[in-house]
Every structure is written in structure tokens, then in C-alpha cells.
Image (cartoon, rainbow, N blue to C red; front, side, top):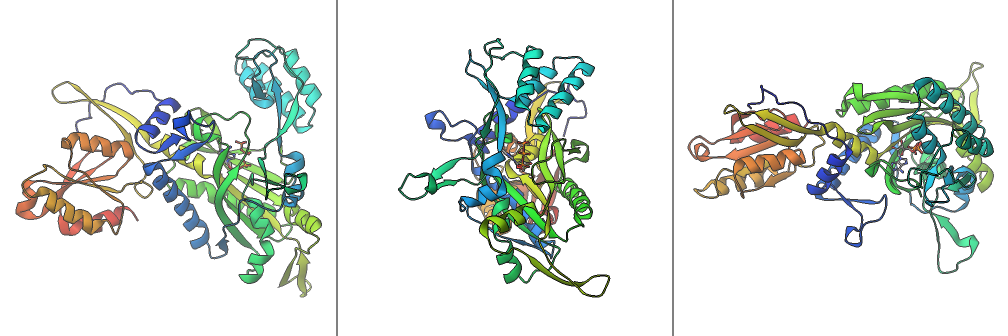
Length: 488
Ligand code: ATP
């Protein structure tokens, strides 16, 4: 590679990432032919594979590498009483305010936070502290007064002609069957966790599981986010990967600290740089939690939540016991200090909850690079590359005959057939080799194998490494082994 003389670095942000994702088949706006649907996205041929690789990595780390965690796959629809018991019907809402002139709706905390960015540091801190205090107290009237006091204006109409603040529930509802009565109203789950709580006894009994143990699940969740923005960071239909860890009452802080450390470690292990991750303790605890922390990632638009770790106490199981009128208890036959079985109790829960789409955005954001360098003849060269960790990359290897003749495609196809049962391979013979390398860089393929005339003489090919563009000659026989090793 000739990039020892680097040209000045290029700046890029979310817009470049969004167009790149679209151009290379990672993410498309949903139903784009009808002009799309706000905050809903489809994953394309590259995106769906990357997403699957991320989901598989999480699933393996949870259910295969922990011998006390099992997985389930619960339905999206649940009995409506589930959401009464979980508290979602009564309190899964965001305070919103509308501007009467522009009809634009804002989440109150976003409106105030954006305004605070225009203030001096001390003044901004005072405003945000006051906002946190009022949000915690659910004091909507005083929040409204705060907006008036600071004369906060709508970005569109530039006026401060506000409605009062109201709570908007974020759950989508629909009807079961054909009768449109209130009793048939059901909800699209806003989190996967409740499918785990509702199945606690089924799984514990049939799996003969002893506390502490965990139940893991990945699946779609739906939230009618009022202000949906920032691409796949905040979607209306998204996928969660959650694990509920059931423990003895009183041990929650120990397990909370355990999972807090474990989850950050896992994110680093899959290749996220540790300086791009940090903890952020919750100021306002959800109705079910006695401790909560976010693991934040530095997205192109700032530090934001990627994963949450929550100590949920026995809130959910207790609520389901009350609403279902079925005993949801665990008999602990370990001995206490007096040598007697500990007996029955409702387990406490520490949960880890990460959005798969947010993890996807994290991986794309940390991998995207626009590189420019000066070639030996002084002219500029450039590429856009996704430096996705090889294990996660959607396509592992490209197999490219240098020319479309002289028997080279035949050799390349043989290598392709030999490799494809082991990892995802891409075969391409069209266009100049440099152009083909660039296309592979853009989708993050870590290795390119090129078959040239020398191959016919000595059974070697070149292997090109995506990150430094270096090339080496390697025997065809050794190829599979070298790549499999790099993917371990
Ligand atoms: P936020 O404060 O960003 O709205 P949250 O605290 O409501 O998130 P949780 O209810 O803790 O989020 O959900 C767990 C995880 O699910 C989040 O850490 C995030 O990764 C993901 N998630 C939540 N809402 C969305 C969404 N609308 N789009 C994409 N991912 C989401």
C-alpha cells in the first residue's frame, strides 16, 4: 500500500453512513417505492447477514458460553393483561408538547436538551438539573413553566406558542379476531422481556434450572416513538436482545455489578474500541428498577445508549403473580445459616438489554472510513472501507480471477466451490481488479483472493488484506486453513 504519505483526513458523519448503507445493500428505507415509512427500515443483502452475525454472536455468548443461560423465542402478541401487570399500559409514555403554529411535536426532554446546548455551561447545567428533577417528579405543569421561562422556541415556526404537556403512550395496539371491542385490543410488545417473565415457571421447571440462571431472547419490539430520528438509532420497529438473570433476593447488587462488567467486556471482545464505550448511570429510575446503567457508545451524533443493565427487583414476577393469580415462586433447597432449606421466594432479576439495530449502527459507525493517500506519482487515491471485524463481516472472502480468460475463471470457481461450505464467499470476474477490490472494501470483505497467470504455474494465489491493502502469495491448499484461523 502506498499510503505512508497520508493526505489530510476527511470528515464524515451520519449522512455518509446512511448513503453508504443504502448504496451497498445494507439498509433501505422501508417501502421506499411508496416514499418510505418514517423510522422503519429494511435490511438488504449485506445488512441482513451482518445483523444475523451480530445476533448469532450475542446468542452464542449468552446461551452457549454460559452453562446457566438458556434461550427462548416467545410470541410478539401476548395476553393484554401482561401489559397491565408490567406497568406499560399505565406508565410507558413520554411527556410531549406541540407547537400550535407548526404542529410539530417534541419530546419535552429533547426540546429542553437542544435548547440547553445554546446556553453557557453553568446555565445549561442548572436548566438540565431542574429538568431532571421535574421529570423525576412527573411535574408536567412546572416543566411547561420552565419552557416558558426560558422562552424556548419551536425550530420550525420560531414561536413559543405551546400546548400543555401531555403523556403519550408508546405502545402500538391492534385487534385480535374480527370484533372491534375494547376487550379484544392487544398490543405489539414494546420489549421482549415480558415473554421471558411470563414463561419463567415453564422454563425453570422443564429445564430443571437452579437459581442463579438466565433466560435469553432475541426478537422484534415495537414502540410508537414520537420523535423518531437518527436513522436506525430510534426506530418504531426494532429488534432487542435481552437476557433476564434470576437470582436470590438480596444478591442483586453483586449480579448487577457482574453483568455491568461482563456486557462491556463482550462489546469490547467483538471489536468495539473501549475508548468509544462508557457507562452512564440513570438519573431517573424506571418504575421497576432499583439500579440502572447504560453502556453508551460514541455515535457520529454523540454519546448515546447502546445497552441497558437494569436491576428489576422482583417487580415483574410479583406483578404477574398478582394479575394472573398463579403462584410464581421458586423453591430454593440450598441450606441457610441454620442448615434448613432457604425455601420459597419470588426471584429477583438483573437484565441486560441491547438493541440489535443500535449494535449494527455501532459496528458500521466504528468501521466506516474514508481514506485518501498520495500515490508515488503524486496523484491522489482514495477509498471508502468498512473495517468490520472479520468474524462479523457479512462476506468473508472474494474470489477474483484477474482476467476473464486463459482458464483463470475455472480455477477461481473451483476455489469458490471449495470454500463456500465453510464461509460466505463472493465470486466476481467483471471490471478491472482495482475496481473489484474497492467494491469489496466498501462492503467490508476482509480477504480478496486473486487468481492470476502465476497460479497456473505454481498453484499459488494472492491474498489481499482489506485493512492495510497488503498482498501475499499463498498456496491454494493453505487458503482455507488461513482464512478459517482468521475467523476464529
Ligand atoms: P432510549 O432512552 O434511547 O429511548 P430506552 O432506555 O427506552 O432507550 P430500553 O427500554 O432500556 O431503552 O431498551 C433496551 C435497548 O433497546 C436500548 O438500549 C436500545 O439499544 C434498544 N432500543 C430501545 N428503543 C429503541 C428504538 N426505538 N429503536 C432502536 N432500538 C431501541
